[in-house]
Length: 117
Length: 113
Image (tube, rainbow over all chains, first blue to last red; front, top):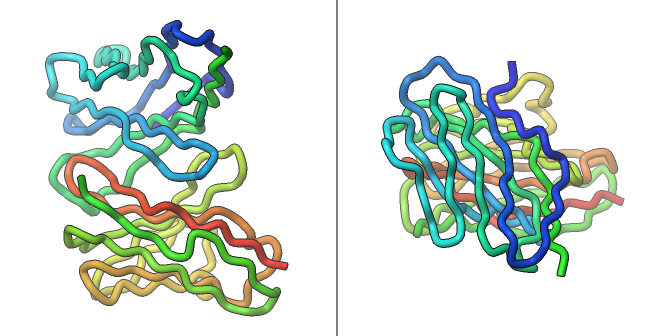
């Protein structure tokens, strides 16, 4: 089974509107972290937001928030007030376990977001 | 935040030659680093896990003899694409974890002609 599933290959949003990018995950490990990364056309991977499996509140970072629904195993990214610079690929990722830096990250297939002026 | 530096950013080489890509953790020690390959508009595909002082662990289907990984110090891992062919053309990116986050290099765009 896929560890991370992103079902939206492409999304469009009007500038200044909010957009939700979907992500579901699969793990039996009670300790895990969920991440969102942005990859512009330059290729660099930009960290956006992190949610730990034991965190009670949804993570927020500026215009980014993570809608964490543990029972449904979903970790959707919400971008508010979209900007043209938000156009990029967005990857949801998961790492099982917290303290072992040798644990690999599992990535979804990505969502290509296009912000329309 | 932590920084991982990858060099070169892009390289063009002739078919049959070898190319070395370096991945350095600049402000933290990384006993483990990861090497990914990414095709256009696709996700990152884990190629191998690089372990300082020991052999790398390769994912199924990745040729060990073609993609040589050396992790000689706590801050440097190298990926050498040996006898490169046009089908090896791709975007290669490394990462290192500093809990809880993964820090990525800038990536290397390899073109084999």
